[in-house]
Length: 371
Image (cartoon, rainbow, N blue to C red; front, side, top):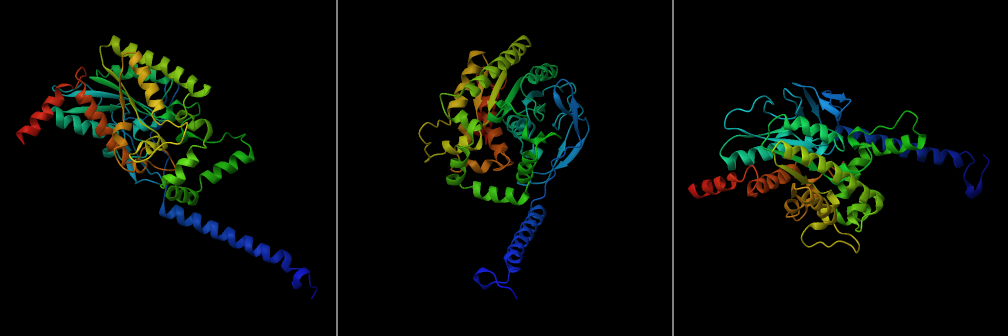
């Protein structure tokens, strides 16, 4: 038998690497199969409808079973107007109050069971503190931001709410589409498709999920995320200044509509995971990083147009590890974070002396005294 360098048969020079490569491929395939079995996913929503004006809305009296790899199975159900709400959108019963909730996937409660959503927690807390039913009509929908919000506001005001809430996170201000809708176009390059295939790997999602739960790993990586992390670096880049200018115009239009209808308008800010992780007690941001810069800028926009502003960072950061309130890889607030944010919003609404629920703070205090 002919020997090659090192005393190995010539055939082993290609056979051994081939065996090694095959072993690696088999292990990767096995890991992917196991990951998909352990962390199943169902993101398709059979209730989703395409709307030429507002982009996405949902079929009335419809329900869809869904799941994020990082979250629980849940049913997303829609009322008679196609809103993700338990209550009917019809005429408000006597003695009831109504909140109209606007925004994108975060407002909708994407990937979160209804009872854990911001909307459900606001309903429960205000109903308890007001001593009378408070319902939330949730008009939130995937990728529903930008100029679409002006049409959504008209729709919301037709519901005769006591208050309109707009819930937004940093990713809502970005130029690209909601990641939940993201699919590469047919003409996308092989590289783009390869990157998407890698991103969709369930084994990779599991690995990232557990690695990124450690802030010492996650935060340095996120801060290298380029434009998407630049809202943490004041003074803002030109792209983020442009996004804030666009938001200013949108808020101006929303407030004008709300004022004409004599309905209070409240802008609610939800921080990105890295943002609130940097705010936790005992942690400090690296030089040049300010996690409070973006909410401060958005709060200034709201104040300039006469809107109330609620920064849920102040509620979320009270936890020693607030990054656990998020689906780490997906980036949305999780079923653990939604109730915390919702409770803080309800608390601030009741504490607003000039708001529609100012009487609820006094009612809540009476209940505590009576008990």
